[in-house]
Image 1: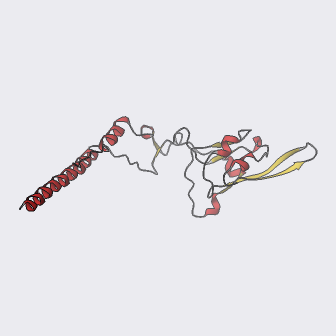
Image 2: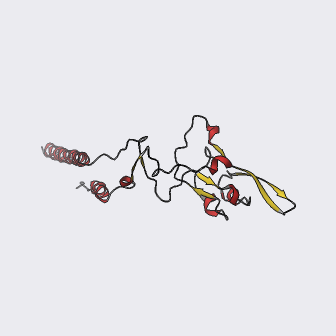
Image 3: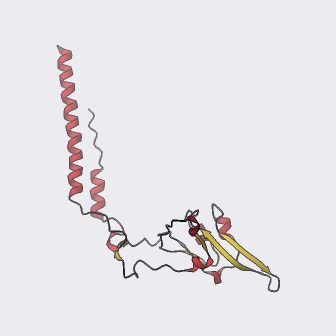
Length: 183
């Protein structure tokens, strides 16, 4: 008889615990229903990238001294620097420079360690193509400055969504509070 009573008590405790878990999930669902959607209509609206965003690399041909520091600090030795030594002036002269963005990991080491600041990161992130060979940019393509998201009149920028608001973050942190229900 005691085993039957203990089994019934155990069953009722597990039922109450399951109801609590279902209630918690339902409260989280109701909390998310009261929030505004965070999605944007991408081709027509774009978020402004952050200040330190690592996008496509911009290259200034005239500033480069062909020192190849960018190649040495790159974890995958990606930039291809082609130069020739001018014996009359005893200096290297840059012939061509290229980066394959299909392989680049956008670490920013080349930009950071360049002694002449001829490399910089842009806010351009739309590099998708159908042919991966189109991602191999030479010094002419790298020298092209992208259109800024802010300056593009055809696109509506959403500067207020560059980061989540404090109210939204508080809602997320409150919904993740872990409660121990084991007794």
